[in-house]
Image 1 (cartoon, rainbow, N blue to C red):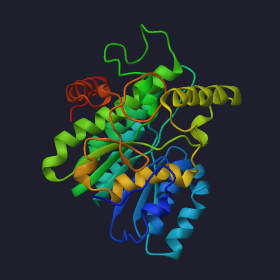
Image 2 (tube, rainbow, N blue to C red):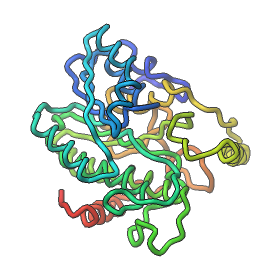
Image 3 (cartoon, one colour):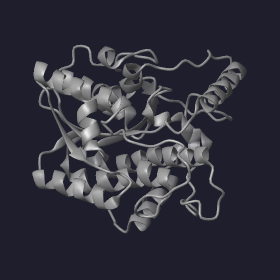
Image 4 (cartoon, one colour):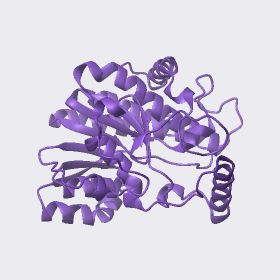
Length: 321
């Protein structure tokens, strides 16, 4: 069993005493929030981190502490350009990483968007499904051969997966009225199902995949929500908590939010987290019921649903893996 950590654990708590020298890790979304802290913590403990970001200049400004950690220790840090809302950009990034040829020990698919107005990616996909799922689906599958034996994939999902299962008949809201939270839920469920099927396909070569919920954190991810919407969301969560007899919601700090990603990536037993969904630095239990709460809905771990999403995703991006 791994050491017990919890919702208050930080990146430094879970990495205490761990030397990541020689580990090479890809982290997407290093221009703000959790991605920056994830990269910083890993670099501070000796890892060679490749950060991916749509806006490289913004990422350079945001990661001064990451570069300081690299300068102060044994780790290293570099940035590559990646716009998950453009498959041309995704494929160019994958091509560059493959041409470089250096393997990865871990991929942390951290980047994403949350509840934007209705829109489409460069390839015509609904913004959240296209960015949060399909962009990562193509990137990770294209560079999967670079994952070493014993490597791991960590997909950032969310308790927001509870809003909706994936819709394989109408993924782009062409016949369904758009609801930003339903769109978010679909994409976050897709992140989990992708990890389930990736884990099944790669575990025989020692590569495991997991999905994680970082918790509620105030980051740029919530830029499409105003204060009244945030207050209503928190009130809804607390109503559910009161009914369940659990404590009221508290926002996590960014180091607490990034802790589960780091724990699942380099601390937890791979056999414990492979094909699972984790929160607060432990594997989550099945938990049905309405509202945003802890645990995972059964549909997000359904193996057949995961295979069907994989096939639908291949059809949508025009590429088989």
